[in-house]
Image (cartoon, rainbow, N blue to C red; front, side):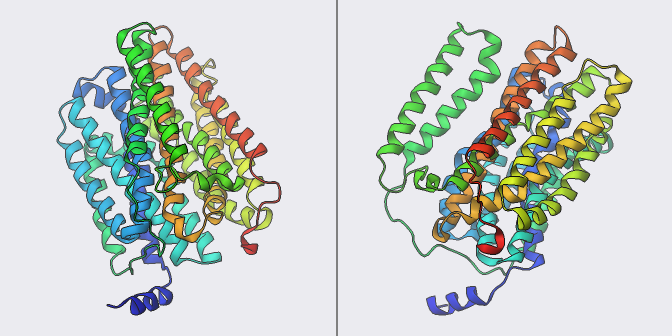
Length: 469
């Protein structure tokens, strides 16, 4: 097929519900099934004989590798095709789930989590870019809303799904269902015309930036999950701290000097709207640590089963689903800033409620349900305006890379939040598990406060409304 006929095909194609459902299923492979194991941590720890620090490290590996490679995959999506990268993401998830299903050690489990992260690094920026290319006007706002339902809604449903699957079929069945979802998603996006960027750089890729980012963040992850437990003067801690600092220096020196093909395209951050969306997105996703803290605390501190703990989060799911569509209306009426600000404030209030672990068991069981619902309300309010704010404020030819950076913020935020929250909880729980949960959850509250400040200060007051774009 010639270039002119391909261009004509792209102009004639409009995104439909079949394609949208396929992309949402791709998003669910990470945000629902990847996060479902947050509710089965005690079972994994027992079956694979892992200590707290090793478990915390391998669980967060997927988010870390997703964040590190998501920009590279976004660029590859622009260059080689967004639909093609989505297919590759589905294939990587199937491979990851097979590795995890047959895993019998911390090492193989970690490999599986890394492959899951690479899968999401392909799927998330590629699908966001497909939405930007094939959906327009109100249809684009709707597509972003459903994409956000897959992301935030999948995250909210993960506790219940993980608990239900673990109770009925065993926790490893989570991976079999994820494989089935990947196959269905791949079939649904079939026959979608390929989408590429017309402006492709042919220079050498910035592998120094990529690998310095990976090594630096991996050092930071191990410093948090293992180093703090060993002590600040321990040899391992000092090595990880030195590695994190040195790789940070290499990364920033390399990126500042790069004129083109930089791993992180700093020109994207000239837009205050895009910068504020990415930074607040990172901080709000740090609060993903709330989910693993609460699920583990409810099981180990209050004697609930994985299924019972998951049921407590259903209000979270319901409010996310409702508010994502409501936030679309708020976006049309007020622009980005107001719903984003409300989202960060409400999410922080919900986490603050969850941190009240000093109340009696009876009261806390009800308080968790209410606080989780508030938590979900806030995330649902924030999600669509933030995604639209980020993607509208970038040029079309950098859509894949920009989507990669935006979702890099999500993944790295989740990785950092999970590692930090789970580590604080595990360090203090041998003394008093209720106090340990409170300390860990108050750390999540701090991230929420920072996210609110970012939206308040950085996002422009006169945000462009969707109907004006």
